[in-house]
Amino acid sequence: MSLSPVTRYTSEHAPLLDEFRAFVRTELEPLARQSDTETGDDITPEVRSFVRRRSAERGFYAGEYPEDVGGRGHPFAAKVLMHEYAEECGCPLAPIALCGPAGPSPLLLWATRDQRERYLRPLVEGRATRCLAATEPGGGSDVMGSATTATRVDGGWRLSGRKCYVTDAHQADLVFVVARLVGEGAAQPAVFVVDAATPGVSLENVRPGLVPEMLCDVVLDDVHVGPEALLGGEAAIGAHQDWTLRALTRGRVVVAATCNGIAARALRLGVSYARTKHSFGAPIGTYQHVQEHIVSSRVALESARLLTFAAAQDIDDGVEALEQAALAKLVASEGACRTVDRIFQVHGGAAWVRGHPMEYLYRYVRATRIVEGTSEVQKLILAAAEGLT
Image (tube, rainbow, N blue to C red; front, top):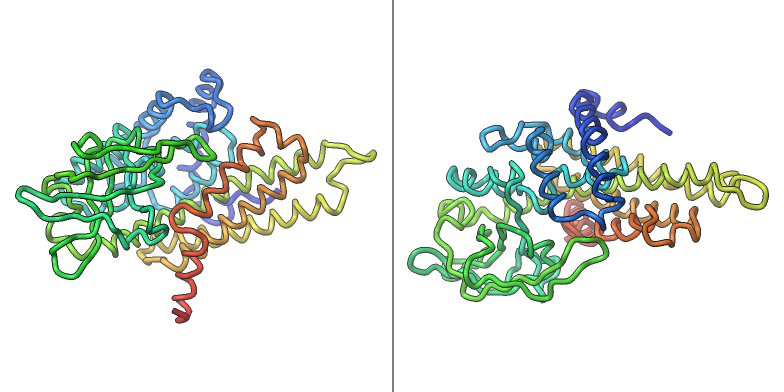
């Protein structure tokens, strides 16, 4: 196929990507074989924890975070390249070696010095995990229009409300709670960092999704937290909505890179199958309908890569990149879903079998059109950028 994305777009990050590839090849692939891990369905919590910590030791897990909290200060574009490779390479442990929803959040880059040391460092070093409690039963994608309340009391704050579809809250050490401040002037959202073991925090409706992550309801029943739980402290009141949007921007570009890796892996599987599978006396890749699936997938992938790397480099250049991230996430997630569906069709009945790589990718890719803002939310952002709202 084509030149690799690192050769084409950001060759200055090739040494770091080569180091990560070697880590996957020499450590993660043997571990996957030893632990009988074939897909993301098979990874135990113990293996996940080990991979996070080992990757952090090697400087990959949260390498884009500052050195003063345990990171390596890697460029964001390098992180994007590694996320794409982690999905494309086919090693089921590779995506866990890079921080995702359970890892450190860009929100903590605006934390106080004490919060950065207390909360951010353990997450960067892979010693702790977190979840984001933002979505509510009546709120959907309106994560900042929170019905969950935070009321000032003696010694801190009282949180009350219910969050839903919280990924892996059952094994998180910290819960990031989006709540609406009560009695602080105009209603405004804020983010609190809450220890999962705090009295009043409980889980309900813990159930699996299409892929192994569990989805939970987080119930906050008069949860008392100290003033240190308010992200950024008192001086940050009023800034949280802007911080959240900026954190989402980075998250959307990471999701776009993830989608590109999924699409690249699916495309490679499809090309290989089309070359070797015979039907009616010829390789199925000689038939135009199969070629249409392959070529359309290639076009979608290359387009998404261009948008994704452009957005990543904008972020490295200090551009807020709200529109660029929305474009990248929209094109990459929609394109990856179509690509996986097309390549599933190329495989036919073979892909329908549980445990086949395409069967797993078919389940895995679908959430990408929802997380970090649905495709419809990305379209609203782009419409607003054109002055249409």
